[in-house]
Length: 143
Image (tube, rainbow, N blue to C red; front, side, top):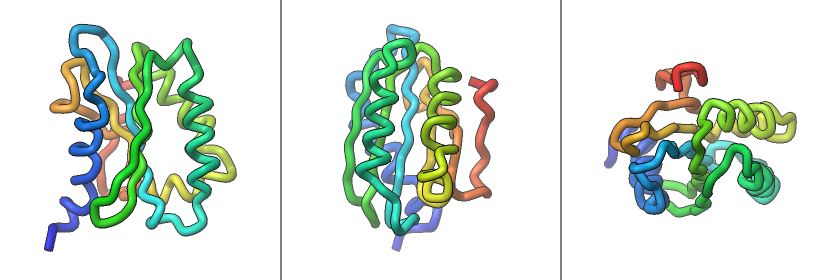
């Protein structure tokens, strides 16, 4: 049996590293990834949520590239990964349009986490949001 920590975190970084193979450390692009575990939030509208992330991916002022994928590791997960030169602005837009949206707010609080890579990749990343209040997160200004 895997530990609680492993169960909460393992699909995230492994899947993100696999999904973010396009990430180029020679640029100033950083990756912002949101993982949603829908089994944590019964009733979540994944089709509607995916559409909102697609709309955000169309923001050429904020998003250089994106990758959406899903998988199963002790439960279904969806990763929404964005390459950006403006991680603070992207994260703030994401909070406003998705995390605080009335139709998603409660579900995102129960079922999502968000991370931002450093300029050197996913080996050094910061946690921006987590459904578990015990997991420390950094404010957008710290990016």
